[in-house]
Length: 251
Image (cartoon, rainbow, N blue to C red):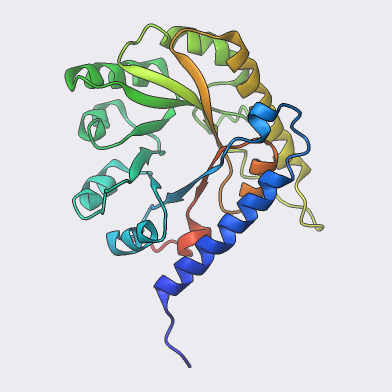
């Protein structure tokens, strides 16, 4: 039996994912505004538990955006990464007391889910004389077990952020409820419902033209549902397992 080639596995997965994303973009027939329909979709490689060697290989194959979930893991890998042309986003739950450790190491924080966190990012960014790009995380399923802004409060929350001069809101991100699973036909109308709701909030918020608030990025869709997310208007998908395989957690 031939030895398993992990790098070949990653390369094939990337080729397959890119083809599926391109096909989904071409089939965005449910989006009637060309401004949104024709937006390029960025592929984020989610690198939770993935070592620097595998990340750097993916970068060598055209990955220019990675997402990290945990502060300690990001810091451990940071100096080992080939960062030439690479964007690093923080996508996990971020505690306010850990913002200071990553404020000068990431290009964007996608998981801003409270005014307290936004204010801490603004404070730390001011200390570094930078403006940090952020996404506002919505709790699209209004789940008690999840953090995030309730969809109905999106515009109200944006108005609380508009005067924070060292952050720049660039869009929205969300994770649909985990129980929204695919049916026996491989379809998922429930997932689609959440993605369509996110897209509508995204477009409606953009139309408000709130100062310091831009709707440039709609980050939704992961390994199991990214094609549906793209069909519904996502322009950034966050994919880990479908690129790198099942995660190996170190205890």
